Amino acid sequence: MAAKKIDYWGKRRELEDKARLKMENEMLKNLTSIYPEALKNIQEKLLSQADLHNITISDLLSDYSKRNQEKYREYIEKNYQELIDSDEKYNEFISEFFPAYDYAKVNRLLQIRSDIFKELAQQTIGNDANKLFADGLEQIFNNCYTSNSNVFAQLGLSGPYGASRKELEAYLNYPWSGKTFSNRLWGNISRLEQNLSQSIVNAVASGEGVEDALKRMRNNSVISDMFKLEADKFSRALENLVRTEYAHFSVAGLNKSLDDAGLKNKVAWSAEDERVCSVCGERHNKIIKDGWFPPYHGRCRCTVMPKMDDLGEDIDKLYDEMFGNLLDEFAKDKFGINLK
Image (cartoon, rainbow, N blue to C red; front, side):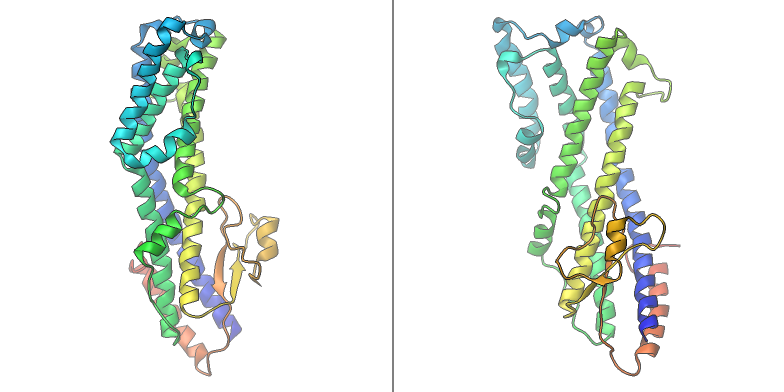
């Protein structure tokens, strides 16, 4: 009987992981497609500014004279006010990800940074990246909840009840590891700005110059090599973010389905291969008693399973029937994504 349970729940989690992976990949494709246009626009703007073509490192970093402070302060503030006016929610992030600056030290680099950040933020807001991400996380939560609750109903347990709008908002705004998914998304965008700005500084300091560096495109016909390098780092950071957040929300959906079915004992279940780390391996197939649920680290592949008492003499037959239904469910797109 135990083997039947393990086989069923193990297979269910395996198929759920495959479905989640496809959903993650689609989200990554949508998010990363936003930023090449931003990089292209940033390059064009920088190349159009003739004073940058032969600028020296001292001119780039030296503070403006007092008489020019007000002029450049207004220039930078206008960039950020346009962002705030375009999206009220953006107000929550601007002070955190582009900290207050000393206007007595405004220089050419700070102007460049404000232009770069403005373009990245406009593309993010214009493409509604935050809502796109939130909708994807809701979908994986709901799919995991509904799919598993239906199984518990077949087993004669309670459910499904579903999650209210208020509950979903609470999940979306919960700081799993100190910050919400939205904070982490904007944090990655802020780091991209900093890295792009630093690449400009490096190009000037090395003697290559801004113009030559932005026109060097050996690996891409549109994006310069130095920007492409930073864009690739950004894509990897986004991948880590998406995979970790999807893991959080899939487990949250599973946990709610277990709670609604009255199943209090939950077992941590890791991927059973050579890539499993010592933390996940140590917790594998053990009841979670300390309240620490997967994911246990970035890109963790762990999930949860129910620890269920025997449900009667016909349990083997019931699990056999559900095994057939399970394969049919994931082959016919009932989970929300077709695995064929």
